[in-house]
Amino acid sequence: MGELTKGKLQEEARTRRYRLLLDACRRHNTGIMLTGHNLDDDIATMFYRMSHGSGLDGLAAMKQATPFPVQHHAAGHHLIGHPLLDIPKARLIETCHELGLSFISDRSNGDLNYQRNQIMDSLQVLQQKGVLSTEELTTMLKLFKETRRHVQEQLTRAFERSVIVNKQLGESTLILNDSAWLMDRPIATRLIGLLVQFGACKQYPSRTIRINSIYDQLLRCWEAHEHSQRKWLSHLPRIATENGAGLLPMDLTKRVNMPQQTTGGSTFYSLARIDAMRRISLQERLENRKLKSGPAFLIQREPPARVNTQQVLFNPIDLEMRPGQWYLWDDRQYLQFMDPSQPETDPKKRRFLISMMTPADIKEFEALTPDDSSLRRRLYSVLGCTPGSHLYAIPVIREPETGYMCFPTLQTDQPKGLYHWRSIYAGNSILTARFHCLP
Image (cartoon, rainbow, N blue to C red; front, side, top):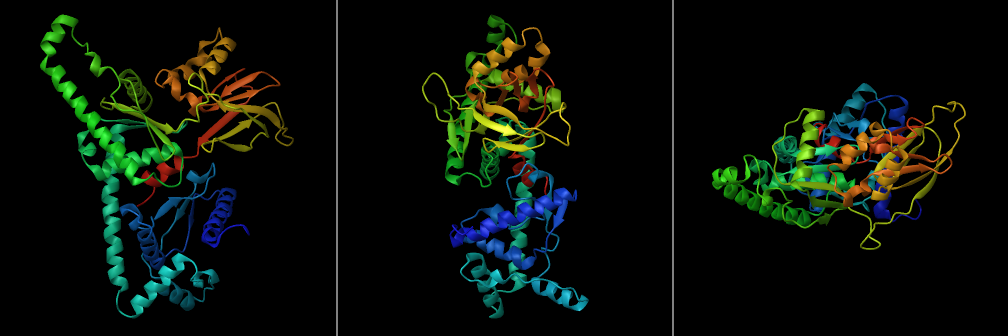
């Protein structure tokens, strides 16, 4: 920590503190940890985010519950609760004195070299001079929170109607099937930003200007699609007579004309209609969700650098792992294996090579399993609706010593059952924070 600048010191200390607290929650099987953050902290957070040009969601300050803000395979399974956000700090201190409860004052809070402490100090001065009252600040904060709650409800409805999420691979499919949210720029740009952030597995969302650019292109795609549909419907009797009922003209079966976009660490890729329909059908079969069809887009981590125009080359990672040990691959996938043949008291390390999937890996796996289509079923279900150029999101694990080959996120391996693999997408806590925590 000695090499850190002072501006990053508090952030690093905060991260390490939350890691230790998360470890304590895991040891004691505690689902939620309550903190003493109070109204003063909440107001200071509002002004701190205002000074950084934050949008509405940031100005609404702290939520009543959030996942741990650290990169960890268990981050989304344990929450931080803030039950005292409505209570001023002075009242909490007075209550502690009355009840004889001891507490610790953080001396670093008085260091005005930190921006957050400067904001806290300035607010106290303004309140003491009568320029601002706690009541006025509380009213303003509540208005922001109420607006955020309303926006959250609209966003949730849009998500349920038009988004398919794969929490294993860390990808999502956005379907332009509902003009209600698509024509609402604040909701649509939030939805796009959330999916980009989820695909990139990053703590902070992409720049607003890039999200707005993608949104404008989606609008043009939607307008072109609607025009094609109206044109098709106007000629429906003739098309049905000449080509047979149910057939669609080519412009409705191809992908919409939108070039691939890259922003915030994610790609925004137009899917062919057949790929979109397969994803919708799979969602109905697995989740009993019936989604209306429309132009669809795949959002996932941006591809690695292309070495040449013919092939994307990946250097495998040579790794030694113990059973039960977690490994973060590509800053996105937490991987863990168990070895049924080894006693838990004496786990031995195993050597694996981990790389990104290529078409050559699929051919190799097919060659290894010529007589067992059941082993390939899960693999084929994903390949059937994923462009070949976007296979890099899937990790491939090999063990040179035994010839073992595995796709852990697809729960497919050969020889089958030699090891038991678990995978957790690191970005799942982003969705937990947005949809499963109190606003």
